[in-house]
Length: 65
Length: 400
Ligand code: HEM
Ligand code: SF4
Image (cartoon, rainbow over all chains, first blue to last red; front, side, top):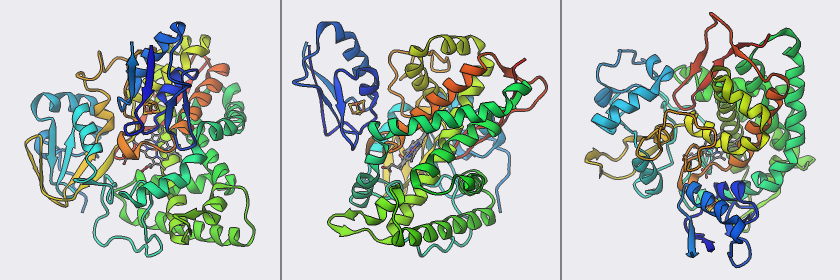
């Protein structure tokens, strides 16, 4: 699984970081991005889906299942 | 004159200050969603009230038609207060881009995760001290003695202004946001607040500190020094936005736990449950309603909105919409899908949301650590404030 954050949609609610701090980093202005190239280790896939389901701006995309 | 006629028809004549709405807005929204999801009133000017998640989010994202230049839910009556010093209003909340964008960037780093982590220790010590005051007595007003005392002191710390003035700050903020029908009180509060910050700014011109106020004053905006009136507006906003809101969220959370002891038990015994629970409490008891001004005539969901009309950004109702949340009136502490908009949606997303979450978590943790089991005092009255910010103002609890 591979994910990415759309910087046009993200407004920095930080729900993703709160739920899956290993998968997202948030800069000083609240903008989130996927850690590394966005690859999600299998054991963190549930966390990734939880983050996706809680982003109020629908900013997190699954690039690769 | 304040309009105190009882509401006969919520779809065409709603009143957010009506006591029944303050006490139980939830059933009003339920009825409206079925009948007329965007209600209207002519009380205090032509105003619209959306009640669905989809509509509230769409409105928040359409910044061309719905401007933030007027975000006050209960407008001033008569002559507007004289505030020539607040040339720019209280940005970023009262601004549209580009002023919104630049002022928001000035403050965001002060409320980043890293920064907020650095405020946690003082917040925890403060909460523990407050509990010390009443824990032995077996009773407390969880709103007035506890929730109300926390955010104002944290904000004072960040701004670098004396914590001893906490009660004065609280008075100003309540007058501006809560006792909104008392125009005279509101005017005085605004004046007090502005005069205070002007003095604080002058002090920092001479001796800068390492607080937010000093940084704003000595920072740059688009390569230019920041004007005093802008610093003033932003500082006033941080105080106004950071106090009533968070205290209401803490108070509502404690009200929930007092009335749902099984949830208090879960949280007291499982610290891991806290982060999702905070989001759920924010969803269910969202304290903040904002407003927008219609910039040009536009039809929204069949409603003929006119330039100058007001639209209430009903984030609390959006968060109770059954189309967006299963069992919306049920508090499910570990709700897995929760795209709540208690902190707004779109470009004005609460700049202080990381701070607010930390304060809520720490306040509840420190309370439950010492008082895991508590109830509303029998026969005592819980009072609520409503309008722009909803939350309990008196919450007498006992813990034998
Ligand atoms: C639980 C507590 C809080 C809630 C529910 C809350 C809610 C909100 C909401 C709904 C907005 C969006 C306004 C709009 O769309 O017009 C907002 C904006 C804002 N809030 Fe909060 N807030 C809280 C705590 C705080 C705190 C602690 C601060 C600290 C400084 C703060 C500072 C701000 C600022 C500066 C804005 C304006 C952002 C902008 O316009 O870009 N808030 N808040
Ligand atoms: S939850 Fe969504 S909007 Fe919020 S920081 Fe993460 S990606 Fe951005």
